[in-house]
Amino acid sequence: MNAPSHYWLINIRIPDCLVSKSTFEELSKNVSIQNPTLQRDRLLSCHLEINGDKITKVIANTEDSLADVDTESVVIIDGKQGILVTCFADLHTHLDKGHIWERSPNVDGSYQGALKGIYKDCTEDRNWNAEDLYRRVEFGLKCSYAHGTRAIRTHLDCPPHQIATTFAVFRELRDRWKDRITLQAVSLVPIAHFSEPEGEAFADAIADLQGIIGGIAHFSPDLDRYMQRIFQLASDRHLSLDFHADENNDPQSQSLHHIAAAQVKYGFEQQIVCGHCCSLAVQDEAIAHQTIALVKEANIGIVSLPMCNLYLQDRASTRTPRWRGVTLVRELAAAGVTVALSSDNCRDPFYGFGDHDLLQVFSMGTKIAHLDTPYDNWIAAVTSRPMELMGLGTSTIEANAPADFVLFRARSYSELLSRPQSDRQVFRNGAAIDTTLPDYAELDDLIYQ
Image (cartoon, rainbow, N blue to C red; front, side, top):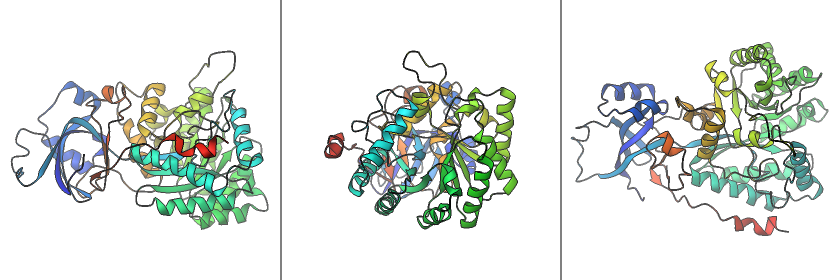
């Protein structure tokens, strides 16, 4: 669909959590079309006016709501009751690892196998030169953009020999893609590294990149000491923090609790995000809820990675897994914690599948964590919530908001999550974009060596 600069997109359904408060109040006054699907799925039947790169009006779909619209001079596009959402935001990815599965497969599917595969590909074989990184990361960006993503935070592996190359490639791609996808970078090292003599210089390099200080918070007797150091480095540089925490099924692993306690102790002012937090789901209920309360007090955002955690956690070669690997997303959200869902790894030793598609993440997350019946506002976990946690402002459908959204033919969540929605329409700056995905063959010369 090649939309003109000024048009009306009519007969669409928007999740009520994705409209602004004032828009919701106005729409609620004028609701005339109601049916069980709209009520159950919390969808608002609307019309949108688009002028240039902005949404100019959001009105309820009523019998006479278009009476004042001059249909002779303005193009009308019928959405046919399809669901419309704001563009996606992917809060936790690993673009630098992406698409090396055929080159470095994890044949036993284990977490240790994944670590070995990445170490070999990056360090032993030294595959991650500038061209290799640039092309693989950009391949991931092409996929993300075509699927409807407008913001991505990627963790970057930082072994000493790799930092200069990886940071240079990230800068180049961030600049090249700035009008299509907002890119953020997070360092990925064991957090103990920041307590080493070179830790301060490394923190300076992250600040120079305009990145986020991050790392793997392994549960250990020294964790609180490491926390003090990394919080101080981040605070001095006014940088946010982003941790990999408790990516295991050990109930004794309580890094998340210690991270939250450190925030309360030091009064850290920047946003903190913690990813994975898998062990929370296998801890005693009372202990888990104590941690959840502390996370809420510390205003920490949680990002669950449902596909990768399902893939790796509780994997054994001779038996069926006994749990799904995800953290307590429903309990965290019920306590008022901001919870997002994200892609994590894509076609690398940590996860052999994926296509940088947040709809697939939402679909899998819904089914794995039972986020349906009722659907509530979980679509925000791949749209407005990660935007908020990335510090990119609100992400709502309202007058004067950017005309960046994804339109699906599906009219309900059941329809939305039952098909891949490969015929979705992605609008950026008010215009429909080409949603053709890149061909895997683009990387053949890098992968099939």
